[in-house]
Structures are given as C-alpha cells and as structure tokens.
Length: 547
Image 1: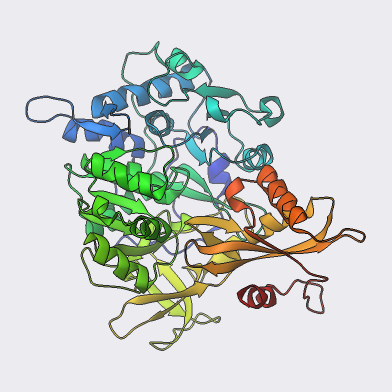
Image 2 (image 1 turned 90 degrees about the vertical axis):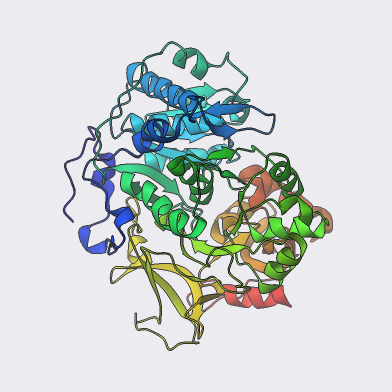
C-alpha cells in the first residue's frame, strides 16, 4: 500500500484506514481510471467542468442544476457558490485539509455547492440523511468526528446542537431562494475564486455511512479518485451520457447511489440535474416529463408505482431508466417496458464500492438479470471457502475493481474483504449467457423501497419501549416495496397484546430512529426462537413471516 504524500494536515482519515493486509485488491484496467497522482475531485467536477462545458458557443452559461420551481443554477454560478463555501470554511471556521465537514440537507443546489466546496477545501465530506433523529446524528458525529456541520435549517428541530459538540451553520431551507440564513450571509462576502487544495488522488475525500447489518453504522472511506471512477466506469460505459442529458432521481445525495446519479455523473460530462427534495413516484414521473428528463435513477418500487397508476406515458421521454437499490423482478421489468417503452437498465452497487459495478447493457432485453461486470470491474460467484462455484449454482458475489471497501476503524473490514475480493453480502448465480442473476441478500439487511434498513437497529429501537421484553426483526417479501420490515415482539409480563399496542410500538420506532425504518407489521409471540447459545434464529422468523 504505497500511498501518495497527503495534503491533509488533519491525519484522522489516513490514520483510520484499515491495515494494509485487509485492503481489497484494486485494479485499474481501463484507461479512464488511470488518474494522476495529484487530484482534487471537487476541482475536476466544477472548475474543470466550467472550463470545458460551462458555456455554449454563444458564451451563454450552461445549466448545471435545476429545481422543480424552474430555478436554474448554471455551471459558473455553481462554481461561485462552491468557492464561497470553501472560503467560509477555511477563513471563518478554521477548516484545514483533512478535517471532516458534515452535511445534512435534502437534495437541493446549496447541498451540492457545499459538497463541492468541502472537496475543493481539501476537507472530507460526510453527507447524512436529513431525516435522521438526534441520537443517530450524534452517533455519526462520534464516529466521523467532524469539525463543523452544515445543516438545512428546516431539519434543526429535534437536534440538540449543544449536545452534538460540533459548530452548526444553518443552510437556507429553500436551497435557492432564502438569502438570510447564516451560510448565505457568511458566504456572500466572498467574490474571488478559491484555488482547490492540491490533494492526492488517494487522499480520503468522502466518508459514506452505511445502514449496516448491525445497530452500529459502518463508515466507508473513499478517495478523490474513487469519486471519479464510478463516473468513468458505470456512467461512461453503460449510461453513455452527453452534456445534453438531464438527470433526475429519487435517492438522497446522502446515498452514494444518488450522489453518483444526480451529481457526479452529470457534472462529469457537462450535463444538468433536476434536484427534487421530496417526491412520490408519480410526482417524480410528472417532473421528469415536465422538465424533459432523459436519465432517471430510482428503485423498482417507484417504477412499479408509476405503472400501477396508469401513467407510463410520463416516462416516454427517457433515454435511460436506471433501476437499483433493490432487486428488479423480471415481471416488473416487463411491465415497465410494456407501459413506457423503456428497457430498464438494472444494476447492483454498494456504498463500499460507491456505485454500480455489475449491470445490464443500455437498451438490452434483460428481464430478471443483473447483468455483467461494468468495464473496470471483475466479478465471480464463490462459496464459503472462496472457491468458484459451477455455473448455475448459487454463491456469494465477489467483486474487484478500481474502488473497494475500506471501513473507518471497523473490525467488520475482515468480513467484507476476503482474499482481496469485496464480498457484497448478496447471493447470485451466473447463467449460461454469463449474466449474473440475483437470488437473495445473505445478511440481515432489509431493502425496502430502495432504503437499506439494518434489522438489529430496528430491534434496538423496539426494545426501548417499556412494554417490550425483546424483539426479532426480519424482512418480509412485498410486491410493492420489495420487502417490508416485519417485527416479532415478546411483551413484558403483565402486558396485553392488542392492535392499539402495535401502533404504539410503531410510533415509538418512528420517534426513535428514521421513520422509514419502522416495522410495517408487528406480531406478538410468546418467545423468540433461539439456538443453544442464545442467539435469535432469524431464519425461523423469516419462515414465520412468509407463512
């Protein structure tokens, strides 16, 4: 592991990288991912983009970001905002290269400007979901140790800022119109360009929290070159975007699926992105039609909902419809194609590798398939001992490429990386065409409507209710959401099961952790099934849920 000389004055991230023997093997087999030793992803994505794509032939600034109300942020304007943020961070808040900066806001232009500004300042960005509760935010603060947090002022309620122990700068709630919040007041004082810090390509640029399969989030660590690598592999080879494309989608920028599809991929080629803070599947489809979106990122659940509403015509203008975040059933692929004419591009990615690494081809007839490795990546199916399994037999998906898993100070690194391969926690088989076909998750992660939900985290929240003795949580297959969170609850002595108590427990979970994680089904049972060592046998609960 020969790392380049770091630009970081704060060495927390380098010091927190896994031991060399636990790193995944990294390969750079295609020319697009062979980067120079010195590289700042923020500079590439906005400064270089302005120079290359920022103006049309008539010297008119080109659009970079759009919002549903018709607001357009041009490339030069986005660059100006990012530079203002970088100046504010470094000159007023004392941020130095290597410091972590936490961002907490819905998808809007100021969030993108802050993200780019943090990178240009040589700091490390930590973007988290805006709807997380205080204890969840505090846990991530403890793990990533940010120097400052930039938080959308609409999401400050319920957050004990003093208890976080981190300076908080409120960000304009509207993302575009409000000009009186603390961030815009501070940033507006700076008019001069900000020269991006000369970071190394292998300096950490991004800490990405995962939902994890336990109650403790895992923090993935990604370099400046990693941020570009997914654009230069999956987007370049599979999406084949041009500067005329308009991207849109449902995933938050706190998810690397959304970060890639709505920020990195379009900025890499001079395209623009329509940012929606919140939209139902039908509203997303309506916005896609209204704003002439050509590349859409969302989960199979959303595509199903649009078709179920009988509004498939809203997606007729798409050039690419990307489906990821959960399994895309063959029936859904076919229904979407028949209703919209769009052949969904299916894929699988992971926060540990930043984005999609196995996918189908653009325009391919591929119902039920996940596809082949994206150029730049290799994939295989292995057994528990790391041996290849015969074609057609199921096993664990293993991946190698230019990006890979590096957890921050986490013993679970040993579980994800095996003999240099990234082991994703998914069960697949390879068909006679060489395509990878998804079978199931092989851990306790529940993927519901594209959201990753750790079952132990939900169990912990349920168990804090005074009426609950203990609980077991599993995913239950669901035709609308892919899976739903299903809880089996053992009540304390003297408590009486009832429908009212089920709702009380559900509301308790919503108030304790992010609301989307709450159990949509609650079943009261006398005792959880356990093995001789006392561990809950979740596979029996899954069977019970299915029955």
